[in-house]
Amino acid sequence: KINLSFDEWNVWYQSRFPGEAALDWRGAPHLIEDVYDTVDAVVVGSLLITLLRHADRVDVACQAQLANIIAPIMTEPGGPAWRQTIFHPFALTARYAKGAVLRVEPQGPLVETARYGEVPALWATATYDEESGDVTLFAVNRDRTSPLALTVDLRPLPGLRVAEHLVLDGSGARGSLTNTAEHPDRVVPTTVHGTENDAGLVGVELPPASWSVVRLVTT
Image (tube, rainbow, N blue to C red; front, top):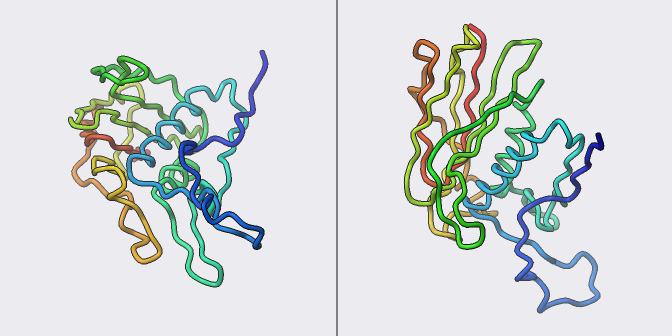
């Protein structure tokens, strides 16, 4: 059994090279500073789910550059710093994906893609913290137009309640929903109220093109 180090992953638009036209020999030029929208954040969330689902083989997975160059954090020399949309699924997964990765086999509809044909609309995983007994669910709806109703069966794990349900919705038109120095919090995860454990079943609605995290804690 050979384990893997999955190095320098991220969303990267290799068809464009921001800053190339002004390329010169000055220090610290603005190069490859991609601006990410909500759909890009959903893609990053989906990649994180895939890495967690392969945690039995992927021991280390390092995101590519963390500041400015194809990065979740943007800065200006002597000026502000702000979080790009892709920062949020990365930060929340790092914070809440603790313990063991549970084997989750999601079932749902398929969506048609131009390159890969039919793919599952639902992509999900969950982690279990052995010390606290808490469970965290991560889920993506890849359908760009339709919401997805998800039912989570927690009956094998009694005594859990929903502590928090966060959604990052990427249904907006590409390029229209981004964070900037002037509007650093235009795209942030939003709290969904009313999600509850009803006799071991949790109903979650996943908006179109969205990434969600549901935190379940012991009562």
